[in-house]
Length: 180
Image 1 (cartoon, helix red, strand yellow):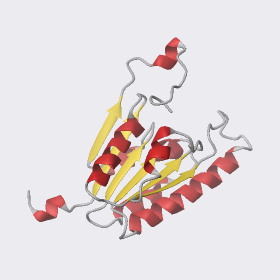
Image 2: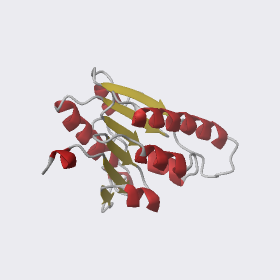
Image 3: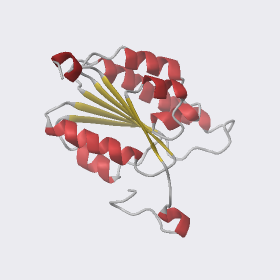
Image 4: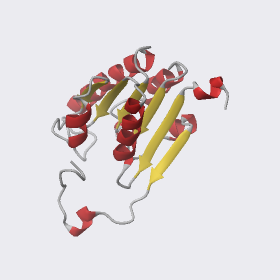
């Protein structure tokens, strides 16, 4: 592999209805940090600052972390609460675009961005433009259910997580170290 291939911009996407999208992305973050890369994690939709991955990674000096969500979305897309969710997601998109252009950031993880797109919290055009404008060498990782086709087309690597069975279906609540 030549130098150009090793330094190309990489775009990886984890989508689907199965568990493991964010888990895979955070595994990649650990790998990048092991190589001394500087990283930004921008979370869409999520608002809980007590989840294990945030408690761990945000304490590390090479990671900048921000959450831009208000938690669970109302089922009704016309709910008055959606305006607050859209505002938070717009802040997340601004943070994502800044990280994609920042030469001091090597690895950008946009957690749950696909879900934010699928629920109409943000538009895909500025995100796609930002990803295309990211410098060579930048690693961009996107997660979330219902990835739009234009992100699938843009990604170098796309993985769909398929749920075969989930503990929630058997009434097992979220557990620290597994879902939290």
